[in-house]
Length: 79
Image (cartoon, rainbow, N blue to C red; front, side):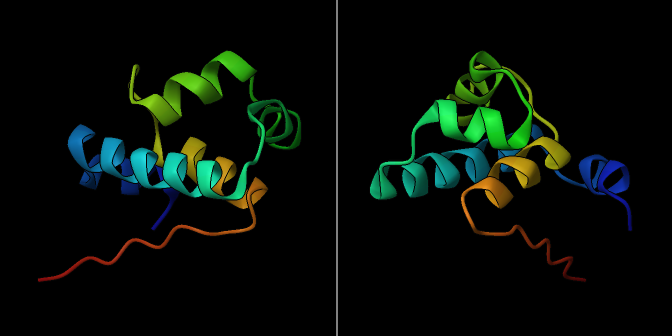
């Protein structure tokens, strides 16, 4: 399943919850937004908006942010 297809299976609320978890992870480790933005090649404003849940975000973007912080995202589809 591609990141585009995963996005179609996750609700905005689920993506926002993942973003909140990543924001907490970042805060606990005191990782600077600028560092994430540079490594992920995403603007610092976009990273900030994504982690605060201010604007819709894709799974692909969250995965890139997670990777820059040394963690990964895994989606489990349960039936």
